[in-house]
Image 1 (cartoon, rainbow, N blue to C red):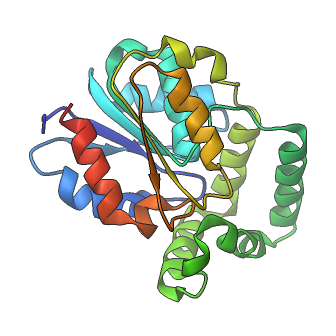
Image 2: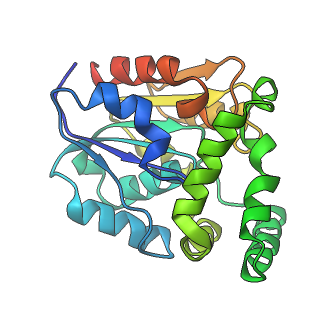
Amino acid sequence: MSNTPLVMIPGLACTEALFADQVAVLKRGRELIIGDHMRHDTMSGIAAHILATAPERFALAGLSMGGYISLEIMRQAPERVERLALLDTSARADTPEKIALRHEALELAAAGKFMAVCHSTLDLSIATSRHRDEALKAAIIDMALKTGPDIWAQQTRAIIGRKDSVPMLGEITCPILVVVGDEDQLTPPELAREMANAIAGAQLEVIADCGHMSTMEKPDQLTGFLKGWLAQ
């Protein structure tokens, strides 16, 4: 496995805890940075901030919103990214229907119902077999609590305003890993297949009995995929 520095970018309302199991393994013998996605309310601003603090060349992995940011980094500075992992994410911009749902959630959070918003998406975020996994749910909620409603709203506005990255997928030439849970309801497997099919040589992995939070639901399997990708 190469010692290329690795930048990992969490998803919406997620902290470095999202990657705790992966960091424990992948940090050995390499610089590992968790990208700060909590300072700006546009994808371009978030990506520029991460690039300003990242090594000159690095491997890049992002889950969900982290994948959206990773694609924006590829738009801004593709020459700096040695390899790219897109985890439970999509290259597409939000549909009008999805944007409307996000605005509803923003209104609820502004009315003091942020935790209700977070709890409402829990079962959508994980596989059916994990719906009674209170430890997993508590870990996801803990990340949201640490993020807080203001930063969550800022991140949500960035997601709403993101560009459609589908047209640029064919321009990506570095080694690509695309991973998705087979029960991911937020960014379903067909969106992962779309990305993998559009990028020459991309490796697609679909994890069985897994939802949107693959790094926490199937940590060992996900870490194994990342180790293989880093060794390419």
